[in-house]
Image (cartoon, rainbow, N blue to C red; front, top):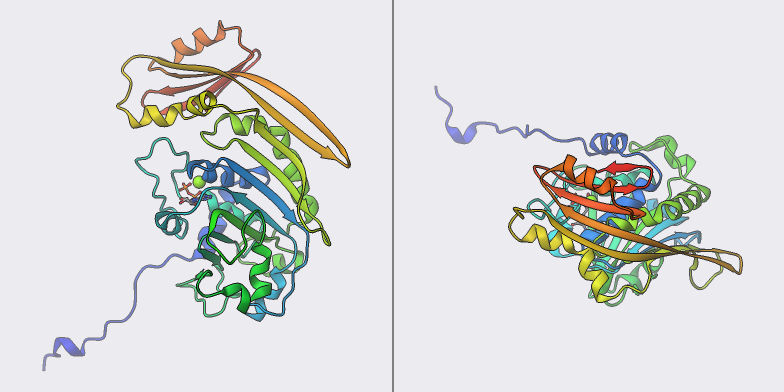
Length: 359
Ligand SMILES: Nc1ncnc2c1ncn2[C@@H]1O[C@H](COP(=O)(O)OP(=O)(O)O)[C@@H](O)[C@H]1O
Ligand SMILES: [Mg+2]
């Protein structure tokens, strides 16, 4: 007797990706240290932000009104990352995928592969952020948030109409920083990465590395040292600032900042040169864009502020002949030159008196 189609057993048997394994692979490919901060700066720049702030929040927040008991252990020290660009609905989709960037076909954006954000798993097992009217929490191991599973390892909460902060004050109070009040839609983005402590590292399926406050301070110091070079390649971010928020203090205290000094319309226009060119058809002849810009770096030690102004001559060039261009650059007297080549590949190079670097 033949079995009728309705009696056939269709067993669930699709191919699945083990998310924690995928994240471990991403971490192998991304070095620790300032790479994580630079990925966040780059995403903010792609989103059109002008200001990026990092803050080591050293306060230990309350744990009486949380979404679940398991979250209490993530109320301690955290890295906060603020920028003044808001997530679009497409951005929410993009960040929830690994390897699914929606930036393809947008040549002026630096992001490509849809993985850079995941370098934050070096620091934490529970990244979260607020943007517009939503707060999003990711829990790839599916162990800390209520009602999560490996097939659905995160939550998004519309916090404005649900008055989340009045119901779960301790859960959402840590996001009240850099203008975010958790009551009205936030005109920016604030990430919170609670640092993985030694106990959590011992059992984490994501990383066995714990992160201390000193770790973060040395990342800040290193980013400050590299600051000007980080800003050099950005299109819209004008300042990167680093803060500490100590227990008992009512607001964060600034440690370092690197910024474009007195940016005017001209500077802003020149920095977006790549964006303009990539939107128009590919240039057939060599195109050149040159301008000067001053970077201001500041560091605060106690009551003392150290300031330094660093002048740059920047030159962006679209050229098909890479060797010819490098030779012509070598003859130029400027202290430092930044160039872009648009041939088969888009590459960046900058040159000092002693060295040439090609990106
Ligand atoms: N203001 C913002 N700050 C940081 N990330 C943002 C912002 N707006 C959007 N994003 C999103 O974060 C996602 C993180 O992606 P990432 O893993 O770095 O991949 P990619 O940059 O290659 O798209 C981006 O695709 C983008 O949609
Ligand atoms: Mg990116």
